[in-house]
Amino acid sequence: MKYRSVLAALTMLLTLNFAAMKAMADNQKGTNCSQKTTALQKSGLPPDQRLLSADPYQTAFDYLVTFYPRWFTWEQASGGPCNHLIGPNRISPLYQSVVAINDDTLYASTFIGAADEPVIVTVPATSDHYSVLHLDENGALEQGGMSGIEGPGVFAIVGPNWMGTLPQGVIPFYVKNSYSALLFRADKFVLQNGQYVNMEKEAEKFRKNLLAQSLSDWLKNPKKGATDILPERNFATPIKTLADGLVANAPIVFLHMMQQAVTSPSTNPLSTNEQTLSDTFDALFADPVNFPLLAAGAQAGHQALIDNYHSNTISGTTWIFFTDIAQWNLSTFQGYLNRASITEYIQYGNDLCNPPQSSNCAAAYFHNFLDANGQQLDGSTHSYTLTFPPGEQPQTSRFWSLTAYTPETIELIPNKIGKYEVASYTKHLHPNQDGSVTIVISANQPDNVPEANWLPVWNGPFNVMLRDYGPEGEVANGTYVPPLVVPQ
Image (tube, rainbow, N blue to C red; front, side, top):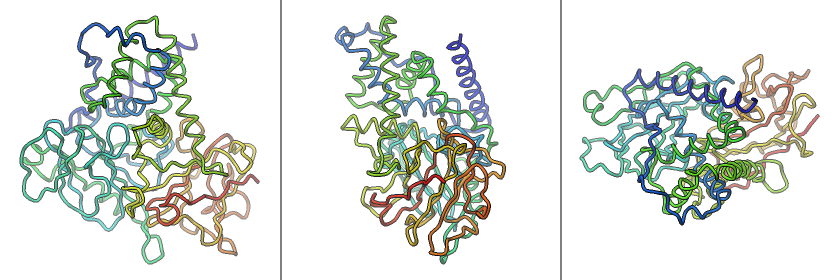
């Protein structure tokens, strides 16, 4: 009975998610980039008998780890806008469509479908700072994509099959894949002459004047395709919670959904090894006698990506840190495992430096679930401090911020004052007498602690993430070690 009720609730959430996204799609010009369908791309031939000799447990383990990111983008794109930018009107604990969302920037994003024709993206001039992240369906940097562009212009995302001629003045980006994701993040605060300036109005103006539309629509009217700013409730589906719940309670249902995602018409071409894995899984999945081992293998694969994330700590500390976000080495299974782990905890994270060891660095993420004694962070048992020694705040060209998250969903923690981060740009952030800066993390604001230095949490387990946008120095080269989180 418990299994059925959980499955029913999860199915209802997925249905509501699709309906909400479909409603958004009906109100704009794009098409469905996911092309979500139950019609699998199969040959219709009987299963290859050689594939049926494979181990169902290991096949499902490898299958889940390899294609876990694709399930996320398949669900997120289902019924939603394609080649048309959208963004939430605000960020709060209600927002759960993307794991580990932050409140430092304003967002505009779209799924890109360039199978038939280029997509034209117009970026306006602005005095604000922003980042551009162009990713493939699995969260890796799109080869030939727009990541890291600077300055205004009219750009074309040109798919691999298009052979036409672009209008004069349009700057092309020739991408490897027909389907991808494009994300803009505009900073709320910008460092100018040693002081942070509030740029929220400029950031809002920037994202509202971003344009994206197909080439044929652009030729009809190049001024159309502005970003739609939508109510936050449209982004409330807890996508990570759905994945975790289905794997735990209905693994065969999840595997079937993943199979639909992998064989979707919009899934980009698989490598030879990936295609073999997909074919093997399909052959085994066709026989229900394999379901118990397939379910166990999928659950083990899911646990492996979780364990891998939590074990990837900086030596001698409890801080989790990956240097390969969006640039995974897929010649090894570890690269796939890291990719799946990041999907679970920081989906759509920026790469550290592109290329590695270059000066073009987007962001670094340090994640912590434990205090200095190795105990779970818990607002019901302790308050905590994190102190940056004098001159040792993270080196960044943009900002650093510390955000607290819920323990499983990795979403913002509700609090009475609606404060979700302490950052280098936080107004009236108070230094100690020696020049160090202490952030107090607690469920209630302690006496004699300025509100600027207080990061609210709740009476229960939580985790914290230190973000560094525009990393420089030790942060950029991967040698920076954040201070310990000390219980009080």
